[in-house]
Image (cartoon, rainbow, N blue to C red; front, side, top):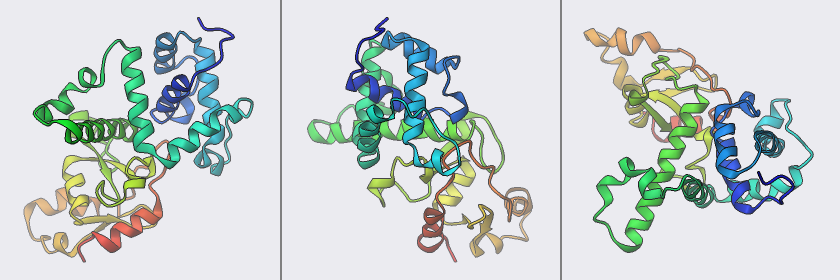
Length: 257
């Protein structure tokens, strides 16, 4: 164990990576993921849990809810928090490379399924594609964890059927691509409907059906799949509520009126 050894940049970054994958209530030494990361880092469970709580003290969302993290040690974590906030794509990808190395693996081995169809790309095109695929995969992990592995409309909990739906699409807002408040966990049908503007969510997180869907009211599938969710409120996440300004943007820019 590295007891008493100063923390490195790599260690701070991989703990911040884990912070975004865990709800606030699991930032403790008994959590399985905390134990696993501590073992990889050669740190104690308690020291990793303390760093997670230091990052919670840096998190404006946690502070806005009246909770607080561990202030002692916040000053060491704040620069990494700020770096991540200002460039999520770079730091998230860097943290995954460090994590893969700790696991005696590589990005290519760890994300083989996500990268298998870009094997023929070369040079900068491949570098960009790998970074994008890895970050999208990690974003999905973060959003599914935030929604406790369940669709926010139906509570379907089959991972293969769940999608981390972007409120502001990946291609539209580079800065917010990996913002947890820009994601909602939805099953495949509702992810597609949301992506195409056939459903939206109001400022109370309730479903609004597009006229394109409402005009299908006479069809047999309507009540089962759409009428039943009309005005239903999202099952809200453990942390990082969907940003209301993003939901409003979706209603203005994508929702089919």
